[in-house]
Amino acid sequence: MKTLDFMIIGAQKSGTSALATFCAEHPEICMAHPQEPHVFDAEDFSERTIDANYLPFFEHHDGERLLGELTPIYLYWPEIAERLHRYNPNLKLLILLRDPVDRAISQYAMSLHRNLEGKPLLLALLLESSRLRKHRNYQGKDSSLRNHSYMDRGNYSEQLKNLFRWYSKDQVMVLSSEQLMHQHSDTLRKVFEFLEVEEGVKIQRQLVFQSKGYKPDQLVLFILRLVFWRQRKKFQGVLKQYQA
Image 1 (tube, rainbow, N blue to C red):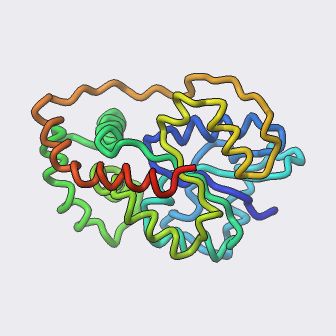
Image 2 (tube, helix red, strand yellow):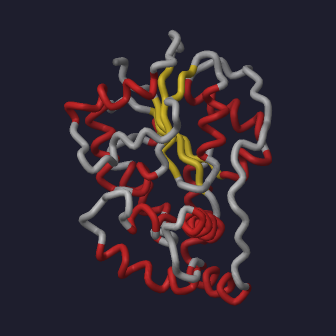
Image 3 (cartoon, rainbow, N blue to C red):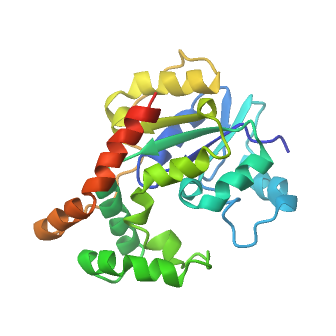
């Protein structure tokens, strides 16, 4: 099948599902359906089966000029960038970033809702490093790398540094989730310009997905913000450096 032209690769819980949904409404774009094919992070990943693995996600393709997909873990796992580059060195990559504290809490709420987490938030955060070390060579669906990486996924500066080893900055667009939420039309215009499709297409703003509400204890939230103080400063620096 045709090689994909672009991907939304992260960060998880930052509005990526909404962006993929909006892109899918553009007449020149065909997005993978269902979302998140997880082709490049599969346990049995093989370059020989990439096209075959993508085929079921593009049965609805009807001649649209661009093919795209969303899998948010691609930004987080360092080995994925090289795999993507071998697949298509001309790939364009879209990245949405969210305040790392809010993102971590949202991921915890998702894992809790899916029965993938049984620990209180503070304990889960204290256990995170040991959980990730235990699973550092295991990428199965129940791996802590997927389900319990609350703080580690907020290390955006390192993730982008790794990505730019393989892709030039003009192939990557970095946006904040706040931009998509509060500057909907202008942000999509920039995205469409980046993808080189018709910029004037109007996409109706809508609530694509609302996560299960979770309000952490104020003490835990305070501790989390202290832990993330340096990371949040880096987050602001990353946006200033790379944001469109």
